[in-house]
Length: 370
Ligand SMILES: C[S@@+](CC[C@H](N)C(=O)[O-])C[C@H]1O[C@@H](n2cnc3c(N)ncnc32)[C@H](O)[C@@H]1O
Image (cartoon, rainbow, N blue to C red):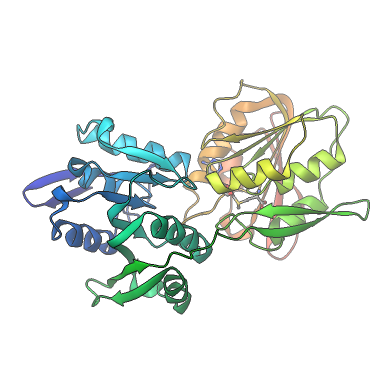
């Protein structure tokens, strides 16, 4: 999609790509943030960008050599693909993994407000630590996503918080005077009940799926999970805090387990929760890097939204990769909301697609190549 600004044209795309033409790579809130930055003599400013999901801010502001905080593998790829498509050298941009604080303070910090307001708190904490006394933080959001909690979090980290007028149903929250006392973002815990009656506590960083308690679809999947003697190599796709891998390890302590997630705080949580030598946690948005036909059992509660938008694109892509990564005699298990109707996609990839169990809301698909 083309973005024309001050006589320059940028071609920006979403990553991963989508067939849904209503899903755009930026919003009116993103445009407002860019207009505000360009009104502030950006060539003389150090710019820090946080939560630039597809690379819109980073690409449009690349000539000002911004630093950009990345928290997803798919985001890193989206940013570099958009830079490449617009013939912008990647060396102009410095990527900073979420959790690290830039060495030098920034004059302008852009934060696209995420759906998870716990994650917003983490971003504000990074933003506040990157501020000097005259820095300003521009938080962009669509007015329909406004919540008072956003202001409470902003007040926690900044002395001054002002909202602009709405334009095209978007608004900016402009924050100044960072408070020095900004604390570390919290770690939550989630209790996982195990079949032998014991339970384990799982650490859970802000923004990681299913805050505070196991997701009900995941619980349904785990209640129905049995692992056979021959299922030795197991893959947990979209592992979140590692709950499925932890349960699988309990059922089969000698299995070789690989857990994969696209989201850095999820990977960090899973690594904290899965400290066993036969479990490896991978920071990745793809499973195509594994050997073909490697796994005996692949398990997933697949992702179904990107920020505020529900989409099956990512899940369907991961199903294709799972079909290639599964061994000839292997099983692919997937829990999903019934209305998503994943069966139509799964039957194209697997010879047999059965429903292992179902309830009013969820189905567990059991798929095989034989
Ligand atoms: C529905 S959550 C399930 C999390 C966890 N397995 C559970 O049951 O609580 C889906 C997870 O997939 C991750 N994810 C999204 N896109 C991904 C991708 N392309 N590759 C791997 N993981 C992805 C998300 O970050 C999220 O943690």
